[in-house]
Amino acid sequence: MITLGISGGLVYLSVGLLLNPQAVPNCPEIFVPMSSASLRVYCGQLAASKQTLKDLVSALSLVKDVAPNDPTRSFVDSNVQRWSLAILRLAEASYQSGNYDEAVNAAKKVPDHVPAYKIVAKRIGQWEETWNKGVALDRKTRELLNSSKWVNAYSVAVKLTHLNNHYWATTKYQELADLVQIAKADSAKLDEAHQLVKSTNVKTLLKAVEMAGKIDSKSFAHTEAQTIVSTAAKQMLKLARAKFDQNDWTGALEIANQTPESAEIKTELQDLISLSQAQSHAKNGSIAELETAISLVQSVKTNSPMYGRSQQFLSNWQLEIQDLASLQRARSVAATGNIKDLQVAINEAQHIPTSNPRGKEAAQTVTEWRKQIETVQDTPYLRAADTLAANNTVAGVQSAIAQLSQIRPGRALYPQAQQKIQQWTAEIQRAEDGPILEQAESLASSGDLNAAANMAQRIGSGRSMSAQAQERVRDWQAQLQAATNLAAAQKLASSGTPESLLGAIQAAARVPQSSSLRAQARLEMDNWSGQMLEVAQSIATSDLRRAIAIAKVIPANTTSYSSAQSFIQQWQQQLNPRSEPRQGNVEGNNGLPN
Image 1 (cartoon, helix red, strand yellow):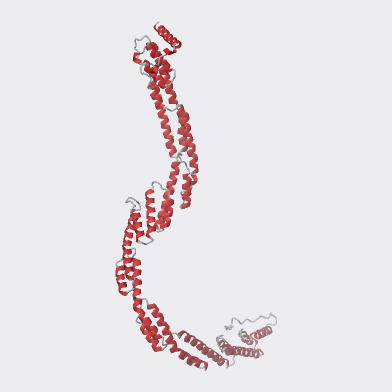
Image 2 (tube, rainbow, N blue to C red; image 1 turned 90 degrees about the vertical axis):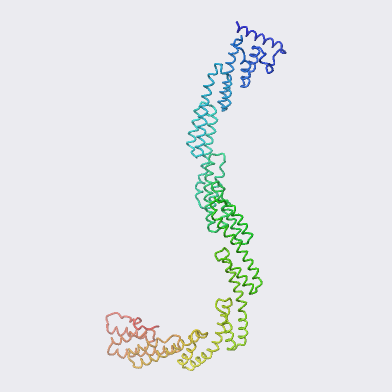
């Protein structure tokens, strides 16, 4: 009866409101504590009809203070249960669409006194468990992607499809699957870069870096790409260090400037660039450039691998600046060319130790100044010597040589002085030895070669005409030997025996081709070979074998050789009429030159 009464009242109220629109209550502006339960229910139903979380919560708020003994209480409770279930449906929809926190917050709006509240706690627990599984699978998939384990990552991502959540099973799964495919494709693009990064060629390493740089930073293969870049950077740093250690500052700087700034080598790379730039400045050698180099190396920190080298350079350059200052002072003093000032400059420069960076330069400069002093001191000797030698007399030249002999070995003008001494000494020797050689030539022309050779040998070795005299002596001695050989041959041939004639031919053959007696020796050899053939012919009438033996030793370089060969054939046929005639061969028996 109460329910019918309330329903009737609400119907009456509704009909009245419909018939009298001006009587419709303004629900947003009602004052709840002073409003009737039926009005609150009406406004609650009106709000709940919009089926939004905010309006459903507002509807629950309107009726939450209806007294338990109010006639409308049971009607209120049925609406509260229905509105609570509507909130749970909205929360479930939010959860399924991926709005986990929003869904939980919505579910917690359900009042704890309605039967639907029992569902809330269970539902939130299920959501939390499923959501945590999704988060864990997502995290694991991404970890595997970061490790470039594409197959494993995809296997884990597939498990999302088994979750009782539309967001994880579809949206998140597809997102991760796409990431796996993209990362896998990007990784395949890096296969060539993996091979290139093993090279020790700068261009090849830069190509690997270029290929790795094309991988999008959002790709999970980006980590792999960065590893390639880091490896290439380390390799390039190693190459730059090698150039640096070889004192090739320009080469080191060129490589270092192209090296990617990997976090692992950033400090060392920057320090290497600073040191290479510093060396480029320092090699110019001026104090200003050295100070610039020092400022660059001072930026190298104590924990840098390059710190030790930087301190070594710093120390050397500081010393070099000191040395340069000393050299500049010394050069300024020496600029006058005065011997006293040069001595002062030498003393200043000698304070620079040879072990210092500019020690070698200082020593060379000191040597130059000493030569300059020696030149000033010894030039008068050269001038005096030239004046004395100008009269072209032996006495004057000897005096000039005496002047130059005062210039000691090791002094700046010593080589020049010695050259002049050698020149003037040769002139004196030619003046002294020329008449001797002329007299020797005169003796040779008269046919007294022995006297000529003895005269020429009076010119001692080491003198300017010694080589010329010795050459003439050798020529005359050869002529004497040729005459001796020819005389000995003639004497030997005088006995007229085949053996003596052969010996005479051999002795005459030793007369040189260049000798004036060679033609006479040639005639004698031909004459003696003819005599040998005549002896053989005369013996042939009684002893063919003896005749053949004599004819065989007639030398091939004589005019009788051909005739001797013909007689040998005839005599052999006479000895052996049935055998074929044999050509005699005596070329290897006479031992004579052609």
